[in-house]
Image (cartoon, rainbow, N blue to C red):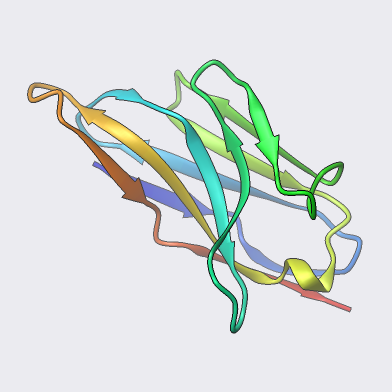
Length: 120
């Protein structure tokens, strides 16, 4: 089982990016999913989360600008980021508890991170 994050890049302030996090492997189910970020010299912080039934929550710093969503059939989570600011510059990580097929063991997984850089 692995989570693969993608979609990062370099964008000017005010621009948009869409991140994706695809889960793969022998998966029975995926629980609540979330995006975190870690900027230079900062601790990793929660950006947005989404439950298995679609309830969302956001950090105050991104409310109204970012939208989290998921496609359970595709085992993929998204983060639409609009009106980006230089302070959004960070490595973005996806996270989710995943239950494996056969064993039905649940473990917490992290994606490898994708760099988002917003220039002023």
